[in-house]
Image 1 (cartoon, rainbow, N blue to C red):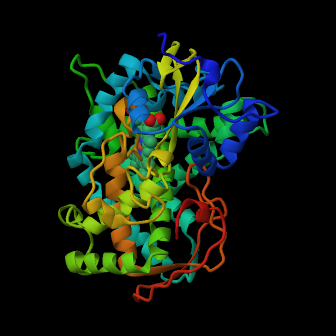
Image 2: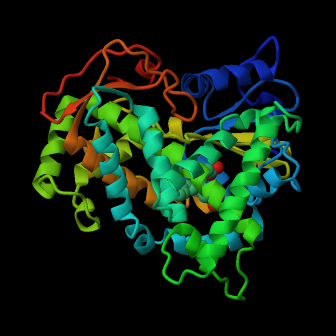
Image 3: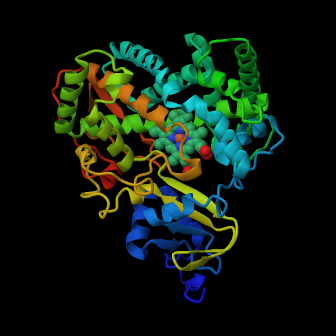
Length: 463
Ligand code: HEM
């Protein structure tokens, strides 16, 4: 290891208050700060120049591959989560693919995979169509909407319906309501698990009890239902080669995680796809022609979804520019070498899809929305990774892509969306527009106009 550079020399910004001030700057402006780190210091950057770097950023496809293909060295970490494992909340929280490692992760992923097979997901297409139309009908009397809120409502309903097979609207909303209440103060719940009345943790525990009872009742019901086709039913039926199956506790945890991991990410991705289209009238015009030519006003089906190549490009491009889970982190299980630097055990390594997706070597005019680029380029799993890569790659990527295609194909044929001029549009780290996404809504008339908006979105995209 003689050629390995001394770890003190990992380049990076200095700060009077050490690495925490830099970390704060990163959390406040994840995209612009990451881009500045990359442009100023290169592919490997440490926050703070203390002996122990603690937080290291690794940029580019080479490091994405190195980090994501060595899960024993670059491990998923739950050390920031303070919820006690044996509590009711802990049991729901830790029975979660994202936090599992090694053999346990492989086993659970194997058991969950059938629920996400292409054929299984195909069977959710008509639910996605029906729930999207239901929302469209509700919009008929509205002139203006907050698009992100509406997309969350829709993806929440699609998730509850396809995951748990709930048909009844009241049940659907009741279930969504419990999970919403439970997850709305998640940062406080995970960092400060204080179980006294009035605290967010106490409230989350009460909701978890109700949710746990409800999911267990559903499990009991589904165990005797021969032809249920939802995700939970598929998880109940799953058997490993040695005959093992998921316990009730594990089923509750996975059902909960799938709901949480799946609906907000997809809602944010849909919000930005509609926003980007509304700001690129020529592309939207071409897309409507494609939808008209292939669907001619009818609902999308599995067969014709695959012929909609511009729609596919729009979704890929929106996830390239504004990925809802655009920065990942792993923790080193032992000291190692990365990019010629010594990295101590326990270092947080951030890999960054957002920056990879903006590298000019990989994407010409990287800050522009150009869905047609996908007709002529192919990128490796480490060069384009909105759903991450390696063992922990999103299990729901196929589900999310199908859902986005169905929702966009229906809503764009029915409505014209126009951002309210002058609105402040600013995404946070998870690509939630923090001041919302106010949109004027009229029946689709093909009269598209780009409007000026304020906010940090102007730093993200060359509009
Ligand atoms: C546009 C929508 C979505 C995006 C951008 C997204 C993104 C991601 C990313 C980046 C990861 C990996 C995180 C890491 O490597 O640290 C992930 C994992 C995961 N996602 Fe998604 N996701 C989406 C939708 C969904 C949906 C619809 C579901 C389920 C119905 C889902 C379930 C999961 C699960 C269970 C994992 C953990 C996989 C594992 O650890 O093996 N996601 N997702």
